Structure formats: structure tokens, C-alpha cells
Image 1: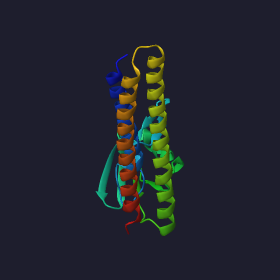
Image 2 (image 1 turned 90 degrees about the vertical axis):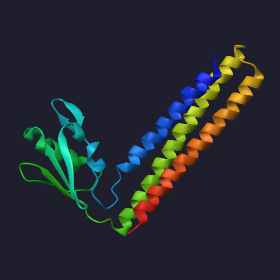
Image 3 (image 1 turned 180 degrees about the vertical axis):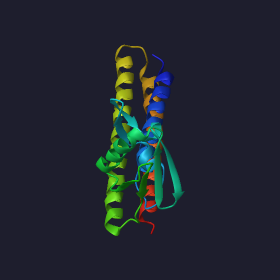
Image 4 (image 1 turned 30 degrees about the vertical axis):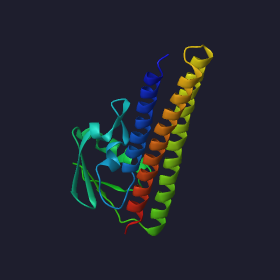
Length: 186
């Protein structure tokens, strides 16, 4: 067994966990319009769930408004329903051509709720990192038990793995703190 290949694979998984957290955080409403708020929403069209970005043009004419113009006007009500059913808390206005979303400023209570949500997203990301670490450690220990690697190689691998995990956890914490500061800024 090649521990460097296992470390590389594990490192890629850790990077993906950070990317996933960043995508989740970008979808949180921060009191100003952003295409990322709605692009990932899933609407049921053509018999399957599709993200809004595959169904419509999302425009931001100003900092408080989002326009969603579907390429197929028959999907207008389906996209509107997806927005209503989402946890965004936005009320879509359908003018027959496009959906208009007015993004209200955040209240103090909503800001606190969102920071709690950021905290839970951060903790979920850390849980994923722990699972990835344990999986990699178990594979290395199995290789040691099968005499594919020695004790010293296992020790070096575990040290390198822990360094990667620590760096990933630091990045997760930085991203979460940055988002919390963004949310609390009035």
C-alpha cells in the first residue's frame, strides 16, 4: 500500500468538505441580493429536480432585488413554488415574465438565527473531517496489520494526516468566523 496515495486522496476529500461548507455559507441570506441565494434551489420541472441556475437567468439589478427569468415561461410557477418552499424566507412576486425577489434587511433576531446556523454548518463540516480522518487511519492500520507497511511509516502517515486535518479545521473555522462577522455587520 502506498501511504502517499492515501494521503493525497484524503487531502482531496478534506478539500471537498471545505468547498461544500463554502457553498453552503454562500447561500445564506446576508441582507443583500446575491445570485447564490437562489441558483442552487431545486425546482421540479420536466419530471425531475433541477437547480434554478439550469432553468433561468438570475440577475441582480440592485443590492436589494433579484430577478429570475426562466428560459421556458411554463416553469415560472414551478420556480416560484421552489422559492416559497425553501428556507430563504423570501416572498416571490410573479409578474408573468419573471420572478422578482425583494431581499429585506436582516433583523437582529434573524442575524442571530443565521449565526447559529453557521455554527451548525461548521460543526457538520468538522464531523465530516473527523470521519475522513478515521477512515484514512483505519485503512493505514489495516495495511500495517497486513504487513504492507511498517510501524514507522504508519507513524509518519498519521502525523502528516493530522497536519492536514488541523489545516482543514483551521480553514473551516476561518470561513465560519468570516461569515458570522459578515452576518452581524449592520
